[in-house]
Image 1 (cartoon, rainbow, N blue to C red):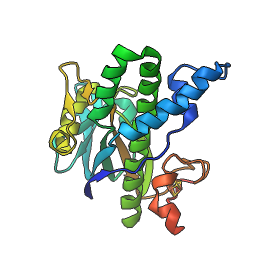
Image 2: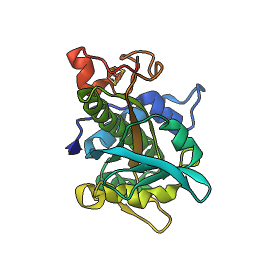
Image 3: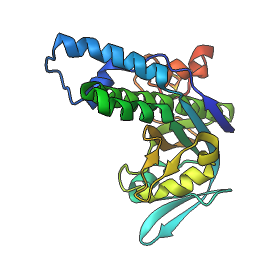
Image 4: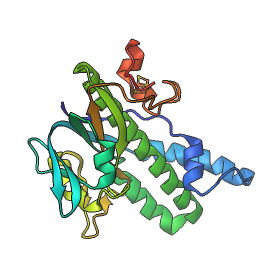
Length: 237
Ligand code: SF4
């Protein structure tokens, strides 16, 4: 599997946007309520969500600088740290994902920073929720590719989670040729541009994972999942 794709994202989870805004059930004004919908609609309009996905075989496991390492075949990418090693324990292959909501989001954020600071904050939250939807879409692609091989996926895991270092980013992005394919670049501080971009890895296993998802209806990948549409299922519910 080696795919660069555009994703058709028509909605984001409103509760997710509010969570990014720091709301945890408390009341907020009707004005803000109405503005959230407007700004989310504008974000969906501006975004150009795209992603690159490749599946690499697990070539071996070892230790580097005192930490466990999962090595992948056909790439310099190594996944170092106890948390990712445990997450990928037993994996025979790994799906590597990079997605972006596009440079237009950053341009709009810059414009709003001069004209409407409230909208800027809400737009930023909507962009974060939207790029996670793009990651859901990319993950659904990995799940389908795994199923085609009779394999089963775990959940995704990003550099910066646990002890998987952010320093993984340059090699991960290079493994996907993400600068050419998606226009994603890294700053000296390893921050991605466009800012609403996400990288992650997903393990592929020979057996089903213990109930990763409560149901297809509750699965974030559901809107993009060809397995669900075909009634095949992925072994995660
Ligand atoms: S739980 Fe259902 S919707 Fe989610 S990836 Fe599996 S088959 Fe698809």
